[in-house]
Length: 288
Image (cartoon, rainbow, N blue to C red; front, top):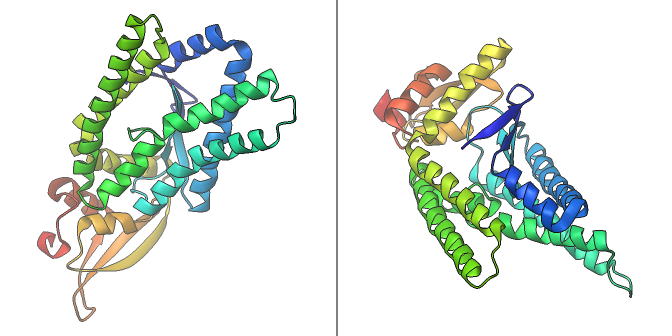
């Protein structure tokens, strides 16, 4: 996916955002664009507040056509429940604001700007609730699928679902154009979802590897970090260990047997090596 990087790569703009912004300017003017950015600010502030409430730091932020995607700091995967809650907070905030706007209307209805602001919040919530990655609805669905299947399988399924949704959106755009109701935003949304979904489908098997490459780079920049130690039963999987690791510290894991005797000690480098060669489903007693 093509994007423009700013602030040493900490903030980027997806190139699909530019034509969407231009269409919004042409159709709705400056008021529509400013209302969208205000709704987007509320949406992302809710995500960030929820993330920090769970102790999850926010790293790189990418501005997408219909919202932002924020990558969490550190290397390790956030637990599914936390990830789903953080994802849900964005659309929930927009829905709450939309409800407050309706409740605060006077007898004369809404002003032109408040009408734009209301529409922006409703639209942003609706789009982000679509069950397609990287939308918030897609993130929640991916977490749910991850409770039944492996993470790579869940990502692959989300990629295929996204391709189906994007194909339907493009078909809808063609149908509207034939009927003389062409809407370029529908084509852009379909194209954006198609490209991102293909990307998720292709990269599903590399997901753990991509995460694994992040932590060493961060440690090289900082040079010093705290140490965390904990014990895990020998029959647990590497994936279970992965969820317990602290993204902000160097981790040492003690593998213990049924009598709580330490069988082996694994440092973070060894854990990463096993993750990349054996996968998250491998049991600890099988990799010792």
